[in-house]
Image (cartoon, rainbow, N blue to C red):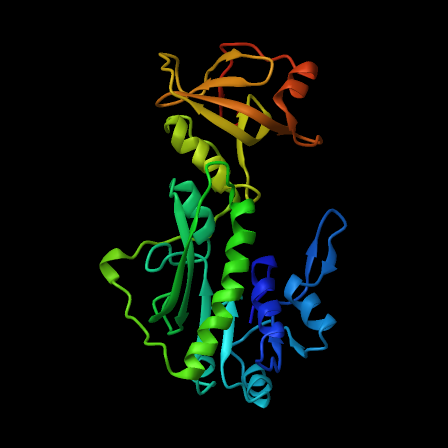
Length: 308
């Protein structure tokens, strides 16, 4: 059971292993892009190429879906970024349980956006945890865990594929060790638990009263979605690449204090932030050097929320 690109390496690893994949469950096709054409989830494409039956239920809490799933007689259900909470009848269906591939070092970053929040919070390492699922939000007993470094330049978009690949390898190893009886589930320490809630578009609005390093981490963690943004009067600026600058400023947070050939330098609550890559309405993302060639920007202008 899985849906986005992050789940693809898990399915591919299972298909390469000595396990028999009897079926794939993924979310329904969704409209995407400007044309809003129906697009299949990435996991569905892999399953179809491999000739694996696919279920795409609109709702998973129905007798019809449970019957279809039961017909496959799964011995174990592997779950990676499926995007739905599994209820008890599904969790109880496979004799060996449901094994989840989660993109964090549990019990830290339980929830829908563990990769993004690890970057946003300035972590230097994360990892993959495989776990036996229960009815809680990533609260089940842990099986295997492996760490992965978060590089200084990493965005959520560059980190996720490395984690996904690790997840596929760890999933196959987890199943092999469960079969061999050499894996003892470990209870999570609830006192160490933190949450990684689903991100919304409005989470991308930059709060210039935050410090420069925290804002830089946020830009990285929000890339590619929902993306960080700010406003110059009514014009929306999507901010794709920045670097923090430790120099201090007495200017109000959000004030453009200077420009160089490559950057727009903005005052924050602590330190300065240099914007290096930007995107405005109806344009592509571009280096600030290119942006400044066609836009008039002056020191003293204020970035923030959209003008009323």
